[in-house]
Length: 196
Image 1 (cartoon, one colour):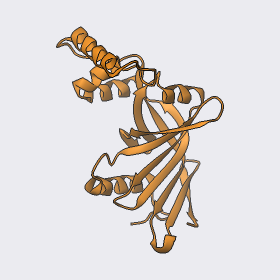
Image 2 (cartoon, helix red, strand yellow):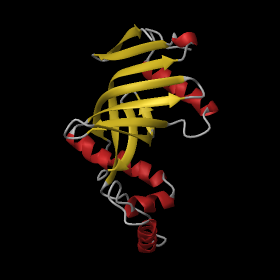
Image 3 (cartoon, helix red, strand yellow):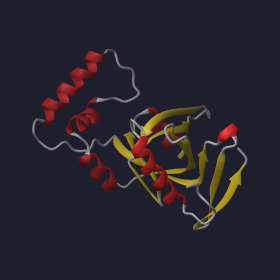
Image 4 (cartoon, helix red, strand yellow):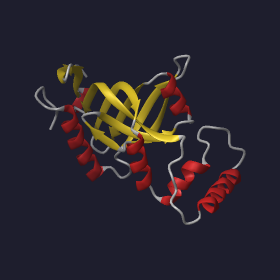
């Protein structure tokens, strides 16, 4: 089904994601996240979507990482989901805000313990002198927490991109693709078909 003017873009997104979960071999929730630095230079990397609803798309990271710093300086971003097995993609652009402390705590508590330890051990995006230094840091944090609960680090949280624009793209023969753009219009959305 290709989204139409009377469809809700988040319901369409959920339907496409569900179909991708049936066919993508790895990480159907993977998305490219684009941010910009203080000089306007763009940077893009793959992250995992951890929540999506009408308020936006949620992902988590080390706040001291490059993307964390860039989002603190310019809280605007763009996302791209590309599902090669479905020959589809979805783009979203908009303002980014931090998730609540409660949301971050709940998601962190749901992570596997080694991932929780890793959030404490990794100085994400900083220079690493050797793989051994990372393994040593993981061992130190593992020993520090022992068998006790691992709390969420103060430098680790999430962001929500609230889209002002969402575009759906579906491959067509002879490059005559289907494209539809939803643009935020007050509390609702306006719909535009785009040339491929």
